[in-house]
Length: 163
Length: 349
Image (cartoon, rainbow over all chains, first blue to last red):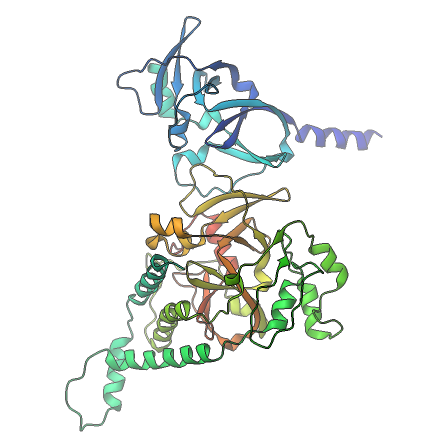
């Protein structure tokens, strides 16, 4: 029993289950690690910041704290769209910073085993190609997993910190 | 096929022809020696070579156009794994292509074993055992092949354009100087292998069509044929990357074949005019080429292909099928290039 159970334990450990918050952008479903998500807000007015980089929509006041909101569509190279009732601002923590990302809508929290995550070919030349951590097929729908830490470059994270 | 697609393909192969032919000067000298002394008048420099090439091409074209040979038995054998047992088998005369309604499983596993059997045994008409058919041909997706999907390969327009490739290869044959064909001119592509070395003397190929261009893929390199369905757009990918298609739990990276093969001729109009229907999966890789229609499959002899002897600038192009005047793919090299995110003319060494 001992040997078999230890092997099983190792296998289970390697095939860890992770939770992902899923959201929609331009008819695709994306997932981000639930551990990095602090909260999800309804759309609120975003104050533009003069001279901010193009991917920064502006700032919001979150219970007394100023949070920078990123234009996720622009970052992903997707066309912009109108804000509607389902638009959400997801507050996340990445690279020791708290920022908001604007998404079309937030769907649910899903559980995924590591073994259920596939790699995508690293053929992208654009910056946005680096955001993709992997993909997973779930209920006939493809979930694209985003690495939030790579959403911005080191320089951009540093710029954001100084805003 | 649209006029824009026509011109794009034509322009593409015209450009290929414009690659420097170092041998023309030498050939001209040879011809000058062979000429009788009586004719001392200056002759146009490239005309004789061009004429010879044109004649060769004309001969090939005439042969193709006059005899659109279609090996129906081979086609049936190829489609056996994808066609369900209820396929209507109309009796037709030789060389006549019809468009029967067939049921195609979304994924084709080419049973090479079964094909080998077909060669050596005459037990069944198709050479594919019923059990393997039932395993492979899951009638999940019913597809009606459109008329164009079965039109003979020897359509006039692709033939004319691919004549350019043949002309290029003929020029290569007459060449005496060896010049590197790589984009940089220095690093020859590696890991491509010569397809001809890995094939039997006669082998089966599948012809498919994109934007007026016909391409051939050896069946041994064919992973399957899948109906193009919902594609998931993946951000940050090159223009030739169409998206990810889920197929039975596996992800297929679908390539916009037209954009990959002829990137310089892709404009908005041609993008809109493309009507991809199928994905030709490359061996067991996760790569698939989008195509507009499947033409037919036939058994050809190695000698029917003008093989490229050097991998050169386009290692994905193994050679040209003389009769059909179309390019034959070196799938292994193609996969290597796609894995590396390279375009059709990028060196992979």
